[in-house]
Image (cartoon, rainbow, N blue to C red):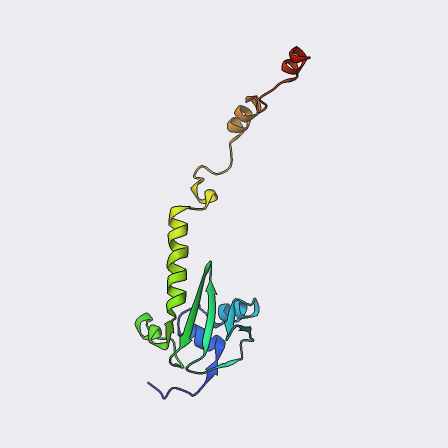
Length: 141
């Protein structure tokens, strides 16, 4: 393996550390502001060095990681995990969010059947949605 550089491009580091599958995806996420260095939005060509603190959002999960090492090539996942260390605050926040998602799942995720069929729509149309009808109101007055 070649000598690790003193600094490297942010998009290349995110790819090598396996946060994103391709450098192009890393560039897109950086440009959308989902990756920050030291709390500041950055550009893909920004140099990262060991000791930099990154905020990386992948999906709904935001991770705070400290850069520990640099690598010119993308290796296996165990090797890529040696390039960074997630902060303890980030780990607890991520675990709390995972627990909240487990306890209160997204309602739309529970829909199994999809769109109503024509027959379902007819049944819904026949169903009286209102608790009071016009006839009931006439009886009261």
